[in-house]
Image (tube, rainbow, N blue to C red; front, side):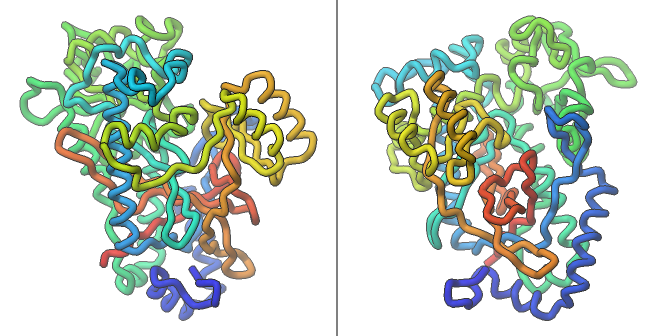
Length: 465
């Protein structure tokens, strides 16, 4: 929010002018008001593996993260370039594998990858779209430098918090939005529905029927599944609500079964079809993959896109972007050491105390080591894991992440943040919602922003200039 000399950054000028006029006690009361709002609305998540396994609120901070319009336009170009490359990569990986033939990508990265599905080989999804909804995790490392920390092309979550954060801010501080012009995000559900409808199979007449497939109420993101279905005007279904009839997927309704054209699935590949994948799954739909491969239903995101979430694949993204676009990446990767490489492994083992080490298939902040804050015991334990299965890990330098202010009992204080913009892809083009989900590490000095690890969220503003 402030420059090193104490002056206010351009993006925060309007907000700072407003904030200086507010009473600190009133602002503190607003923080409690926000918590009450989230609790009444039911915006919660579950933490797997916890003994109490209770639903929790994601802490919300009322100081927005603000990006100028110029910064956003630059970011958007880089995000679109990356997402188009990801989709082209998915198509190539399940068809001719030109990138592997060229020597740019080692074959072992997908040969030993559980997220790569042989059932998708030779099949092109309706409209040629694999990655219908993508979340690109960004970190800011300098005044004019953003880097990609992670790609989320399987089932990116968090968009409901982006929408509810904005709604909460507008309810609490309506006058603020008349002083500062902020790009709207409320039309995301409408754009999502339109984008999914554009990906419907050929031959669908009229408005395509869309359903959101959820694993059920015990899933950590169930609130989001229900929220998006409601906002889109789509049906929220579980696997038991769907059935394959005459070569098409149908859903149970009060007047019998009706066909479904597009399924926005929030069920993992493994559980999607017990006849094709895990035979003990009760979350999916028996025979849905046959219908899908016959071109009679769209599944978003396409099965098998989890390959793009792999952190070893991530390390090759600069090569992937250049291979499919013919351009240098506009958004750089974080320097990444592939522990499967003997020289990289030696460097990582020699410098564990300074690096961040992550599981290749890990997510949610689990299974990682943050060297600078780890104990000697934790480093020693991780050393054994690395030596036993080096191919299961990548390592990155500890970044000097940017900070944004949060509102504490003692006033404003800096905390580290990242940003997850949400991207929609269809045959009609790429749509990027201005802003996204800002996650914030609420613990002083912490670099872990995941909600499962104690992080919170803030409203993300892109100035409408």
